[in-house]
Image (tube, rainbow, N blue to C red; front, side, top):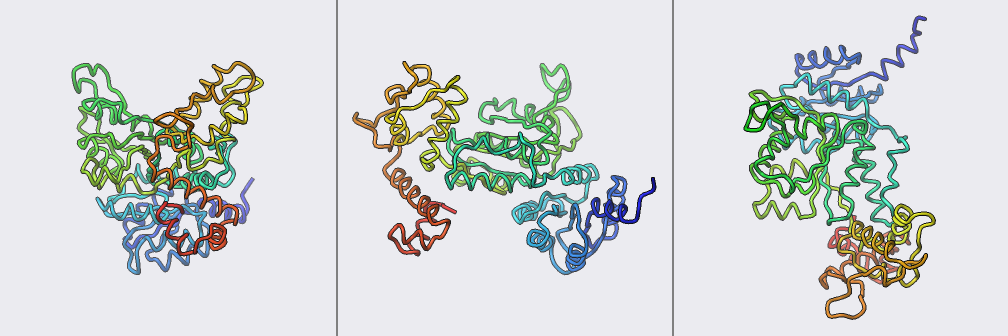
Length: 450
């Protein structure tokens, strides 16, 4: 059956790509490549023409050069973010211009290409953009794994929703046991890469002399024992996400190689003479302060800026005490059998007063141990075996915290509760706390509360 004019127009709009570049040969190259992929390209050469085209049609993707006669590609990135947020945009940057690429990703770009434009990378980028997730998510991609209704966890969920729509590298900060890998898996699952591999790597567990071959693979005969060719982590994660846990533990020599792989999107196997393209999204994490590592010379500054395009902070459990009850219920339902055991009022109070230096992971371990040691249906405070304060006596909830950390935690908790009670009205929250608005603003900045 022949297609109607309206059906053809609908299909063209569905597959329309806006190409913005002032060089005719690059526009023609991208146009031909997109046409072979069954896509319709609309090519323009300036910021003004791009804005007019965006307002006139709906596009499934926008590709823009960084340098244009009447502005820069970032102008288009911001314009799309403000008026056409549903359209993913990628920028084309000059070869080796890392600063432009990072700036574009921070401004909201989906991804970037470096000149000269490689056709394999262009096709991979376009395919990724066409698989961008919509508002409706599959049931298995939900955020139920992040238990808790505290303001801090609400902010984490909101960030994960946003980050899943981007290809920008993400740095997840937070203490050990705070759920950094879980957050990385949720970002991957909700992204267009959710159907491909999620490859977690503990950077601190790989011997230094094996790092290059583990990350990039090796050719047969590359070294003693290399009896066959083998792929590395980058090849295993192609099309998906590579999660670098404890990235601060990478030695400086490996940091140089990782930086090149991220910038060029190409890797060379040990023993190979040519590079191969890889399509990998990088998410990294560490319990250490990566900025401090840079200041001490233990971590390369250029790699830090490449990895820390967007930061997601996982709050420690002591800063979201209101989440302890739902976390306990969830963990006991998972590990406690049928029916699951319950905590006595005294045990629950002890939990809420404890500082949890090991965060959610420590909470899980405590409950698993208590479930095994309990004598009845109730878990009593004595079954928890929580560490008391040094010097004996009843714990006051400070645990191993310094006095400053303990007081900051209490102050943060009081501020977040006030903001929640006033539905985000900071003037009313300051009044509720008995301080001035200026004082509240200072405390928010000091405690890093957004």
